[in-house]
Structure formats: C-alpha cells, structure tokens
Length: 280
Image 1: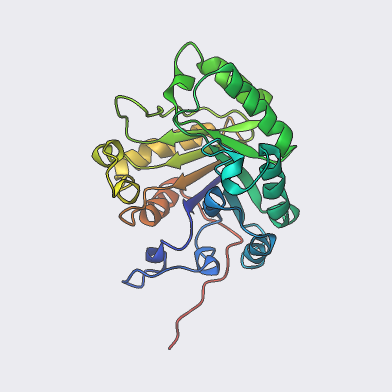
Image 2 (image 1 turned 180 degrees about the vertical axis):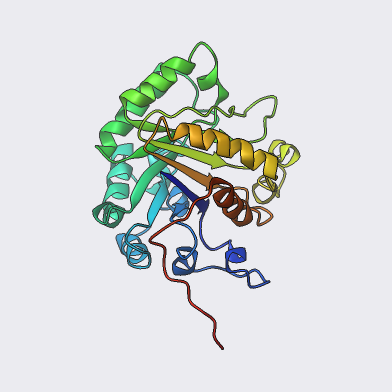
C-alpha cells in the first residue's frame, strides 16, 4: 500500500483548484489525501479535546503522523516545558493523543532528532528508553546527523531501528557539505516513511532570518518524482505501507507535487471525505 500526505493541512489551498490560496480546514483537506503530518505537538502538546476533534473531522480510514514534542527528541530540556523529567512529557503526549490511538488514526509518531543528536552510546540508550516510554505505539525516527549513515555505523543503525520496531524515515533534502543526511531508501519495519523537504541548497544552507520560511522552497520536477516513484514501488516489497510526506511548501508546491506523484503511481485513494459541490 502507498499513501501520500502533506505537512499540516492549512497551507494547501491549491488542492481546491479555486484559483486563489486560502487556509484549508481539515475536513476539506481530507477530501483529497488519506493522511497528514501534524507538526503542532512539536511546539506544544495539544489538549486531548483537540485530538478528539481531529478524529471527528476526518473519515474513518484517515490517519495522522504526529510529530513528537521537542523534549521527546532532545531539542529542549524537560524544565523548558514545565516538566520534571522526560518520562512526564512522554506520558502527557500519550494521554493527549489517546483519541487517535483509540480510533486507529495514529499512523506513527515522528521522532525528528536534531543535528546534534549524533552516534553515541548515550543516544543509543536514549532510543531504547524512547521505545520503553512509547510501549507498542508506532514510531518513526528521522536522523538529522549524517554520522548515523557513515559506513561504520549504517548497518548497526538499521539493526537498532529494526530491533526497536522504529520506522526509518527516508529523507530527501539538500546535500550541504555538513549537516545533511543522505537519501537512503531502506525500510526497517512494516511502515516506510519518506519525508521530502525539497532541494533548495541555498535556502537550506544559509540560515538567515527567513530561513525557516524559505528553506523548503522547491518544486520537484517530473524526472525527480519519477525517481521517487521507482523507489516507492520497490519499497512496497520491503514494507506493508509506504507513506510519502511532502514538506516542500515554502512556495506552495507540496500539494501539486503530491497530486502529480499520485498520478505517476496510478493511485486512487478510497474512503476520503466526500467533496462538496459548489452549485451556487
């Protein structure tokens, strides 16, 4: 099975083909794609009532990739969010997101680790603690430190993810001299996740004041999408599901690229929300 989604739902008004950009609602987004990446928990864990609302606003088969809170991925210390320790944050996250789990709408928890999360014994131990905190919940690991992919560590890294039942997040991003992880399309469990950030080398490398707004300014061309399609089809032989998330939205390109990839793969998503007809 292959699924395609975008990062957040609000920024993709072009899905409606109305000739103008506007903020989408979640029910509108769910008319076109079967999943979405939810990034807001990284900055602050939403209330349980918010997760319950998102469950109610989407069709039965719709699913969420939920980005782990910044404490859970060691971007910040627990005290920064008023917690006494990391275990408390994981418990809060699990309690709040419980409606997604109960409804079968949690595709996976995205653990995007920072560039300074390198290959160390302490970090390996931390990954084991993360699995303990999450129990049997699905989780996917995205490394931002290229050392995990060095020849000396690559196979051990993949073996660790398999042992802990973490999905390996396959990343496409600009390849800067330092700080970029390579595109490495290998699955480690039943769910393969591709996160496509674009290839804007200049925007990715130059971290000025508009960096976060410009770094994913990229529209994949047909040749690039066809190359992804080849790997995606191959990965279906390694995993039960391949989920592709487009994050190249600085210029509003993610939705168009997602629909084009869907066309190239010949996919028809079933169980979407019914599209409303504008008759007047």
